[in-house]
Each structure stands twice: as C-alpha cells, then as structure tokens.
Image 1: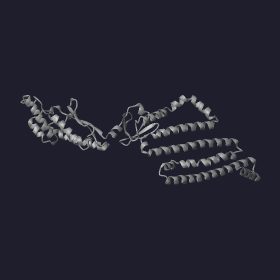
Image 2 (image 1 turned 180 degrees about the vertical axis):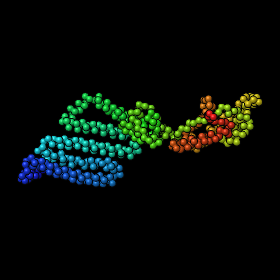
Image 3 (image 1 turned 90 degrees about the horizontal axis):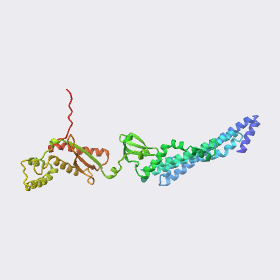
Image 4 (image 1 turned 30 degrees about the vertical axis):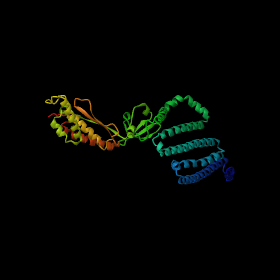
Length: 412
C-alpha cells in the first residue's frame, strides 16, 4: 500500500499537479481502491461462509444450523474480514489528513461495536428460535431472557460508542453514569419491573405460552401468544390482540384456566328458576303418570313403596296430602335431571356431578346443574351445555312445573 501510495502521488506530481491537489487525488484513489477490495472480500467471504454453513446444515440432523442461517449469522460474521482490512489500511490512506484519519478510525471502531452487537443478536435469536422448537421450552418466556441479555449488551455498546466519540475512557464514562443511576433507574423502570416479573412468572409457573387467561382489568380473554420483557400478548377469542404489561401479572389479579384445561373437564354451572306456585305434592295418580318417564320410573317405584310403608306403620292420615311423607314434583324433577346428567355421554363422570336446589328468590326456586363436560373446547362446550338445557326447558312441563318468565307490560 505504501509503494502504491507513493507511486500515485509521484505520478500526479510529474503530471504537473500541485502537492495539495496530488495529496487529495492520491487519497481518493487509494480510498476507492480500498473500498473496492473490501467489497470484493466481503462478497467472497459471504459466499464461502454461506456455502459452508449450508453444507453443514444438510449433513446434520439438528435444525439449529438452519436457524443460524435464517438469522443471518454467517452474513454478519462475513463482515469481520473486510472490516479488519479497512481498520488496517485506512490509517495509510489518510496519513496526510490527520483530522480525517481520526474521524474515520473512530467511525470504524463504532462500526466494529455495532457489528459485534449484531452478531450477538443473531446468535441469541437463533438460540431463542431453536429452544422454541423443543417441547419443554415452548411455553417458557424465552423472549424475556434474550431481551435482558440484549439490553445489557446494547447498554455496554452505547457506553463504548459514547466513550469513543467523546474521547473519554470507558471507566470514567461508566463512573459518571453511576452517579446518575437514579435517573437511569427512572428511565428503565418498566424494563426493570418487567425483568423481575418475567423471572417470577417463570419460577412460579404463573403463565405459559398457550395458556388461556382472563384479565378483566385489561379486557383480555384468550390465549397467551407471547411473553417478553415488557409485555404479554393475549389473542382474544374475537381474534383481537390485548397487550398487558408483564409486571401486571404479579401486581394484579387474573384468572388462568390451565387448571381446568388439564383437569379433563370444563365446568357447567347454570340454573333455571322454577315458579314456586307450581310445586306440589304428588297424588297416586300423579305418581302413576310420572312412572311412564323412564329415567325416574324405578326411583318412583322404590320411593313409593318406602313412603307407603312408613306412612302405614305410623298410621298416617293420608286423607290430607300434607300428612306423613310425600313425593313432590319438584323433587322428582330434580332426580330426573340428576339421572339425565349421569347418563349424558358428554359429561365427565369422574368429576363433581350434581343437581341442586339453591336458595329461593322472589322469582322462584333456582334448580342448578353443576357438572363438567368432557370436551373443553369452547365451541363444543357451548353446544353440550345448550343441548342439556334445551332438554331441561322442554322437560319441565312433564312434571307440572313452570319456569319463571318476567312479564313485560306495554302501555297502550
């Protein structure tokens, strides 16, 4: 380079150019030649590294090397050699221009830091993408940890760049920032809170990617699609996206449906209100009529004998229906629903299953079905519950009962 430099300079002087003009033209010619060489080396290096990584990716079973290529790690590494060439020869190109040489040298140092950060980012993103392909890491907040590493890396990079540009040593610059730590903490408050929250969420296994959560404060009701340092993304059932601050998961209350999803059943808890005026004791004629309903036929047969024996043994006067023990249409209906639910193919029989009478209200007596559907998928769950209550609403009249309906009067 030195010989070429002097050759071009001497040639320009021989052509009758002034020393100043010869120096500028010499510098431009050398700079152009250096940039062309760096570009060619960069192109060749990228091709070589690309083919090298691609050949390895084809021969190996793991997909990690494919992910490295997808995240452009070979391309970023290829920039190192031309950058080293520039760092080596730029001082010679600008040897006659001290101010420009200092500026270019600092620029190349800054580019070196940025390139290093890009290589680190490509590698960490490759690790993140690879871990997400493994089943045991799919539901872990990997994004949060990668972001934390990159934040520290970028902070160090930015501090180094400022130190290079200002000419202040890195240690002096870091000490100055230490004195302003309170301001830094204030600026990065959300990031720090998010980092702490990410660790707690992961350690306590509060939320995983794929969990169904309900967060009323933020209007979120759907599946968690992403957990990173600052936010948690939830895809709601209407396909909208709700973004929740990560630290809100430990500072506010939310509902995670994972327990229900892993339990083998989804709860059905719904009631109908029976009009109190329609609840009556059953006469023998009523019992005979209800025996035609198959699900309560055996129950009525056995219960009738037990009640009849009890009343007979105790000389109960049955001329008045209220005396002694009696069956009611409400009780028989409750038994009918219990048997119906127990025989329903979509109900999980290994979980809590009951039909119960709730506390009376001004409108009537609520009859509640409490059970768990075997299918937890929302659409199927709604179908199962709708099918059950279609039957409930249609069967009430067969027991001489009525469901409360609010009467609405309109003015003429």
